[in-house]
Image (cartoon, rainbow, N blue to C red):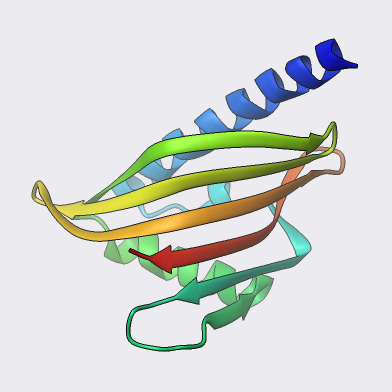
Length: 133
């Protein structure tokens, strides 16, 4: 069982590495389509320092926001730091990391992110929680 989980972890890590590389390309090109591998029941919650309760978006709302943000982010760099991947099972994974957003080499935002993934004929993002640091 451990060998299967290690193989699954390796495969998931390769997929997630590719996804992070796609972020850089999406910011350069404005094309978010490679980042749209979300389950139909996907949701994301954004916590900010300005509001007690999170902003919560469903898949359609999140996709619209994603597409707008990559178009508006052409001057930005997004770094993914301190990533930890944990496999809950061979079909479920959690990813924890910090997103560091910079403009012209200056940090303008730092966000702690938790992603939940499920395998269903490919890895799909099912839920995200983002908390501004």
